[in-house]
Image 1: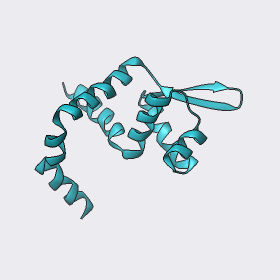
Image 2: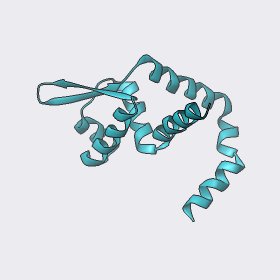
Image 3: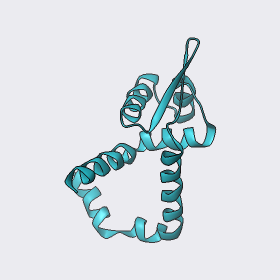
Image 4: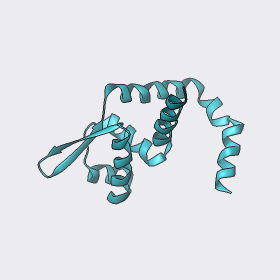
Amino acid sequence: MEPLLTELERLFSALSDRTRLSITLLLLEKGELTVDEISKDLKKSQSLISHHLSCLRNCGIVKVRKDGKYSLYSIASDNVAELIKVAMRIIKDYSESILGCEVLNEEKHVVKS
């Protein structure tokens, strides 16, 4: 059970970063994109986007395909896309509870202090 928990924790940790989650949602929405296209859409530097894409690739969340001199990034599998879609359904059903969770609000406050 412990290795599974560690892997789940790392998966959700990879997706919990705002930029990485934004990249994932953008790729789900638009399909294959270059680093340049992602950086323009998210208004972030190419080096920052490359760093986050490296993490997402290493975790198996996104894949890359070479097309001439371009690297095109996309969601790695239907399983990853389904995970995000299920999360979106959960948010739709429990948005108020998630946003109002006092424990998470306290943890966020503690981390920033």
